[in-house]
Image (cartoon, rainbow, N blue to C red; front, side):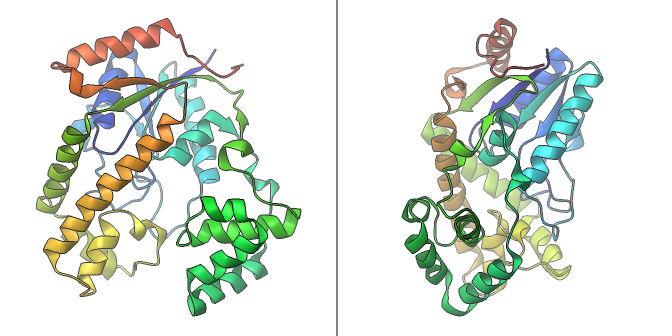
Length: 316
């Protein structure tokens, strides 16, 4: 029976380091579930682990695509499952680690992403309307068709707004909530580990990490990406740290303001991540603020993994 360890939690909580610690103990390899680390050349802002931080543990789905490429949740699901199978075939334990909730859910549940084809003509028309009249104009169209979806989807999340309108036109009824669109996977069993810290401590870690990213060259990284032709319109450049510095480079505000925005937006993102993951009752949570020694948290998690109390999924 295949078993997959999944480690989740907010940004800057310490998932990467702990995943490597666990991998060393159980002969594991790591599959990233981070929507920014997937891109090449975006190393600092995405806080990719260095080779020394990886400690010889193989990592997958890091530096997978170019930053001007498109990459969907279905792409992630397909590749991550293939890598999980590859790791199992090598006789090792797959450890998924990351904070992108959609990526994690794509492994916990199965969904036929190809079942609903896109409507290119409708999409193009809606994109043109958004460009001319603003995102709210298109969001109001969704509100008329599917008020429930409009309430769940922010007007500025244009891609999801347009997708919801496409679904309504093709199916004749509203799009389901994300969690209702999935069925539990049958490929493997999974053990869910959640990490968190006391809010003050987490926010301090976030602020310090942003300062460290700036000190190690985040601004230069963004300048190089912009020089290569990337703009704020690229999905990759909408990530926290990148979009704020593009605003600075465009003269919208001073650098200190950009750094402040990165810290604020990262804290807000961490809060959204916790809200997302708290909705999953299968996650076993560990408050890292309660541990004085790293070895103690590692031992507690290993004990829980060995007990397999919450191994979910039907497996093979």
